[in-house]
Picture 1: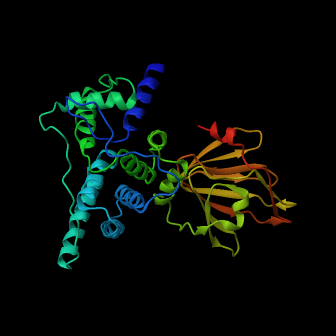
Picture 2 (picture 1 turned 180 degrees about the vertical axis):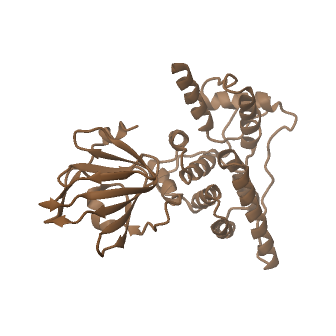
Picture 3 (picture 1 turned 30 degrees about the vertical axis):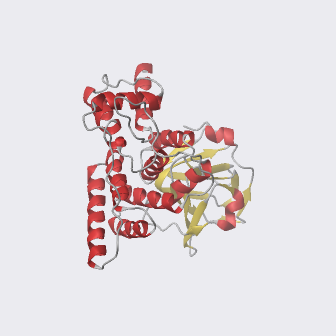
Length: 357
């Protein structure tokens, strides 16, 4: 078991590497372009990268075409966008990447028909074409991780593909910087479900390369994945004081039963609270999307996924919210009762939340 866990940890780290330029056989591995530490908010260029990456991952072609138009008008050139979509095939799969590239081609054709100028940009420079890509990729992989990685026991083919193709070929393009490639990857993973461990690893790698916590939060917010068929609604400002993080509330019904659709950004949770009632009362949660937690006072936290149902009796101290790196959404149904009221209490301790699996 320990051996398998170690192999998985190495594999996770491997897929979590930021993209960078590759050196030739005669030069040491270096980062592409200047990689100064970025502070605070995303630039317009970075925001464009986030939007393009998230929409490619979601497969939302109509919205992607609009984002491509905006990105081209705001400074990204055609080959940079193409390079982004090529990189994403390794994270989102060939179908999403090919659909995105086709959307890019159709957008370019439409712009040309309307006479809208489009900057093509230089072709990627991948260095010496005669270089041994397996050797180059192995060197770069080792430099990025800090140690040699051998996944041949897991799959000799995967080990070779990662070294020679992912590290030795795709990341060799110099059109996008190290930080930009991490932004692209984090945005795409944030828009997908079931890739929590890979996303967490990329968040850590991003921080090491000068991307701030504030920027990462903004990337995740912008890349918000499709939740359920129920609209998220507006930011839940009225109850913001009772939440750690940002949530959204859409009251679907106030007749007969009060039903609210609550959407939590990654890491967001409400404070400990109690639904009081002299008779009846309480709350029912119907989980519709994402991954989160529910916990009653004195009991271990319960992981929640789409399809789960939580019955919360009146008088029970509890909290619920999202997993650290995943969005979460549920319907909150107020159970009718007499003399009902909510009592908001202290926030969930950061150290307790951090220990949740």
